[in-house]
Image 1 (cartoon, rainbow, N blue to C red):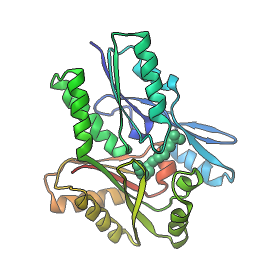
Image 2 (cartoon, rainbow, N blue to C red):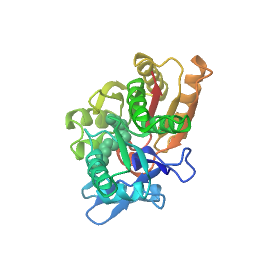
Image 3 (cartoon, protein in one colour):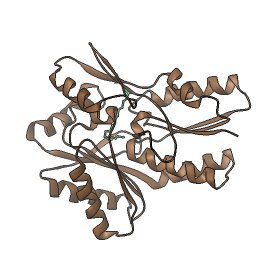
Length: 276
Ligand code: X90
């Protein structure tokens, strides 16, 4: 029995990722170039080209074909998608599932709409892996992963919401307030899977403290934590230390954002997925 874990590329899947996950690539698009968010993408080069480029840039979710490529010939596919409230990604995955199950009636696909992104998706993928290793049936994996989603959360700080606003995914008034004053925004994924801005803060220490407070308000008491940063390893390390000061036993791991997340989380942003 072939079982595959799949995700869109916003889950930051690198070639050595554990567990093994097949990723359907997002795309970052300008009028002159399309960047495919796969292992071949040079993210730093893309960011510097985008800085120099003055035209319009946007993103696109994986196509139905991209999703079908990740399913390949698996008997059972379990997956996660970025929130359906900010992307057509989940919708494309659902079409792929319908086609795949129609072509192969004995095969099964379940894709979870995480109403979230990056590090919370990583926690969910790890949970799928545990459930598979424990020998759970398809229906039980599905029900267990849905209950685990109720326990996991996403919080973040970002230094700019420009690309969110330009792409109609956040209110431009909120975006402007941060950009102009050089503030950072601390927020969370709302229950509906949208970006909820909660606090405006200035300075690294205050930002990290506010992010930690937000985690505790959401029920964090020392479980698993996954951090994803946009070329800001110092903030990720400092935040890991801050968590360990209060919860020395919590399992904290750090990844670097790939193309799509660097485009939206912009330079310096940090996302935290955790168990509540
Ligand atoms: O379909 C597409 O074109 C992709 C759109 C993706 C938009 C969201 C990207 C999020 C990247 C940024 C910070 C966290 C916000 C979380 C809200 C749920 C990460």
